[in-house]
Image 1: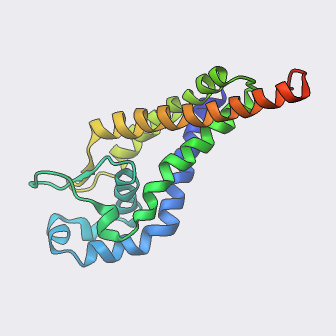
Image 2: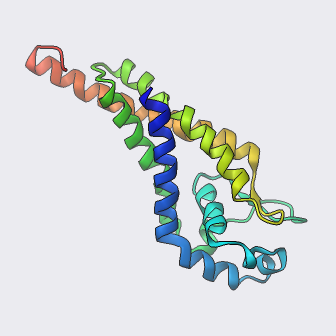
Length: 179
């Protein structure tokens, strides 16, 4: 139950942190790049351009119309620190779900942490569609698979597993089940 809600929440918070820290840099990068201006990116609303960066921070890549390959909006904007946002936030989310589920062993923690992928996947797909603009869009398949499944499954499981380890150690030390 907690997993889907926490997955959705961490997606939204991750996007908002990306917006707060990168919106002006993204705008400068788009305005100063002839290739992007010619593709129509300069007239994109800021929230959509920040969305391209958010997906690039998940290693999804953004496509321009009539251009092969992906554009690295994170690199163009000079906000490489955003590559840390998805894994760190998803690690924390997996840990939060495991804590809320009161797991007391690593296996249960991993299982609890995995559940964040449900909500995150849904929003990763919807978000990729919403940030599309005049043919500029994140690769939808990669958004679903990499951003929606790989990142939350891997990071959520690790975060949940870590909480399971910590709570199991605590249980062993105090000798009673944790509540």
